[in-house]
Image (cartoon, rainbow, N blue to C red):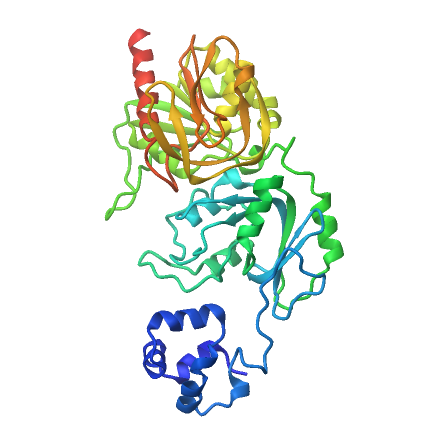
Length: 458
């Protein structure tokens, strides 16, 4: 039996194949994606190539690829090379791609329509398997610039449609090959709407995504692995993704056509505590006129203050803030006692809140995507924000010297706080917009203004 690619080559390439069958090249792309040729085109293909009917993929000689469902039996459908096994035993069958491996984690969903490479390399996704609700993932390929960390922390990804050939001038590698190089398995062809609705209604489950090219799966072992994974609550993952040693950062934001720049004349010195910092956050700080020194998540107040910073930035990151707070809270409290301005985002927001005396809790489904509406209570403006978090600050537990500054318009959860007796504020979302909208870039200017005011009053 011939593959679709072989048949397209026999027809003279995509354009010639389209002309012979009386269709556009988009139809040929769909052949490749489905790995089959619709029956209405068989006569033209047979006449042009001299092949027999049995040699065509998708004919009765080959069992069509079966779309999986939540009620799939334990026997893999013909052609299944990947599966998702949830902790409750549910199995979704599909088509594996990326690394041939099994990865266990919390199954979450992301609603962003762009920036899948930035999402996959966001350290805040440590311990998680990402389900993309947008169907066209992989279309722009991958490159060496759109990464937020060198080693991706996400454990796997799930998509609706098979990954197609990239169609972007910046692409240097197919998403499949990029995933293979990082040991990350992918799963395509499942009903992502059903999975997303399940997460929305019942919370994020633990599960295993598995890719095996031979289609042989040990479901008993996979179910045991999914059920035995402890989950993110109580898990300190910042230590897994943080830098191991301090370093300086001067790269600024990307701009077409020049790419990234360099900050050669910084006005302020900022220490960024790396709980899982994204590169574009550091670039935003540098672009705002800051000399940036990045320190490990475990850095003490003394180690942070040794750099004589004008301000301290608390980065995003994965895991349970209460677990990371065991060592982070004393450090943050020491910095605030020294009177140094503090700005936190995401996990840094939660840790600042804990350092002020508030409490955090795990959300049922989390906020993940680039279309999250947030209201700034100070200005009354609504920002569309990029978010990735599974825990939240309980505003009822905030002390008297802290106030709520931002709220989610999706579910009313806390999205920002500010101390009233010291220069410290934080937001739950990602203002660096990588990926996502740039509505919240002003927060970096607010941080710099706080630093300048503190310097002027000193």
